[in-house]
Amino acid sequence: MNKNNRFYITTAISYPNAKPHIGHAYELIATDALARFQRHDGKDVLFLTGTDEHGQKMLQTARKLDMEVQELADRNSSEFKRMGELLNASNDDFIRTSEERHHAACRDIWKRMEAAGHLYKDVYSGWYSVRDEAYYQESETELRADGQRYGPQGTIVEWVEEESYFFKLSAFAEPLLQHYEQNPDFIGPAERRNEVISFVKGGLKDLSMSRTTFDWGIKVPGDERHVMYVWVDALTNYITATGYPDENSERAGFWPADLHIIGKDIIRFHAVYWPAFLMSAGLPLPKRVYAHGFVFNRGEKMSKSVGNVVDPVDLVTHFGLDQVRYFLLREVPFGQDGNYSEEAIATRTNADLANDLGNLAQRSLSMIAKNCEGRVPVCGELSANDREILSAADGLLEPVREDMNTQAIHKALGRVFTVVSDANRYFAGEEPWALRKTDPARMETVLYVTIEVIRQVAILCQPFMPQSAAKLLDLLAVGEDSRDFAQLGDAGRLVSGTALPAPSGVFPRYVAPEGV
Ligand code: ME8
Image (tube, rainbow, N blue to C red; front, top):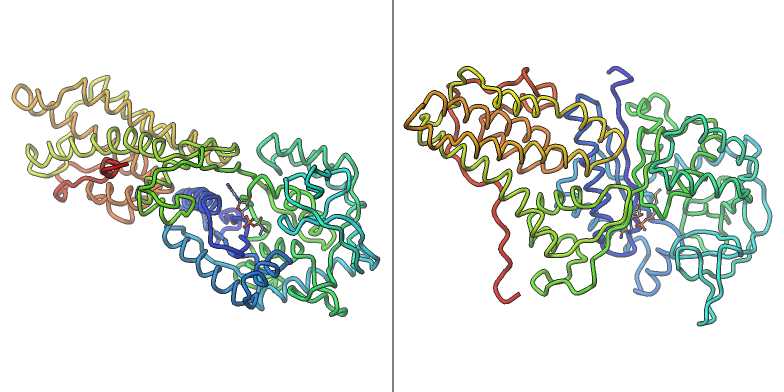
């Protein structure tokens, strides 16, 4: 396989200390759309997600629940896997940091950092947030009226004092700044890049890399009283999945990753610590780290009909999977924070999916079933209007690709749905129902143009709404092997006379249950 054709994309790996929430679902859906886009665009994709099972947070939760920590990890890791299936995530692998393949990779990268002379033993005394699994400088924390000290993410920090291995992070400030400068696309979006640069410019302290007060983690090679700091272990998952340290592994060529998708709260780990570890170990750096925003349940007063809407399973059961995927990807500008509410999901999906795309497909395909013997109509000479709407559809791929390559997912979808609106206006303006009596040949051309636009829209919608797009393509009798982006435009035009299946609705209208 051509090396340049590979594309390796990851989500963060989630802490399985509880069941997955909407933030986890959001990240997985967005990364899935980006991964599917690359596959349809002809890339050989490796898409990784998984669970981050070590650390103090997991240990504390297990103790609270009076469970074995491995049992807690097993139980919730399965929940994350199930959520992936429910969301139709197309990940090629699901990594668990408690797996042996991962232990081996962590031992190896540790030894490389040690051999490079970047690890030394000392005593750590400072602030630690178990919730964030992060060390903070005292200057980053504040003492609040409740007598507790809080870190920059608003979580409680506690004083830690113990023997620890340290990583000479301070030596990497300059190389990191140089890397950001020379690779302006390394961190996105711009706000996050600026945040990271100013953090590094503020000076880097050496980083505590191991813990000795508990043993739930990966043992430090040669000094088994220490377990690795959970973030050393967590970040290494991205190379474990490529078969590291086996250079001959089938997946070895996928490293360096093209894209790490993460939330904005963990940018420091991915854009400062991770590249520094890799530099130290003499391994290539990922090409890009992109931090999305947080999604919030607006107010908290979601409708009773949805039940506990923070649970992505409930949301999907209530609104439908592709409706939720579409809403999150279209409504929230990727990279910024966003809100969701029952009204917003209902409004957005009814307006764009049921009314615009769904109705257009339903109306044109029903007319074809009735008036064209259920076959792709004959396309006569094209009018200026026909050409205009066709060329709008034909011209989508390039700008949409540009959007997706810069993670402007909402913009990509916005572009596709602008063409859907234009196609609705075209359809209404051409009045094919009136042409049925006056000029049936012209009616056929209008219907042909309409469904050809729908074909292209459906092909482009596959990364975002895989099931619904597939249904639409089935209704247009587009073969499974004719659904990639290479079939957009002229290359894959519908062939007049092709028999079509009986039309059926793809995007039902959402109607709120009675009594809400
Ligand atoms: O941070 N909206 O795990 P995690 C959007 N194990 N995204 C959200 C969110 C929200 N409300 N809440 C969390 C960890 N996220 C580490 C990662 S990677 C080597 C280790 C995102 O379970 C969060 O930003 O706390 C992160 O990208 C992901 O969900 C997992 O969060």
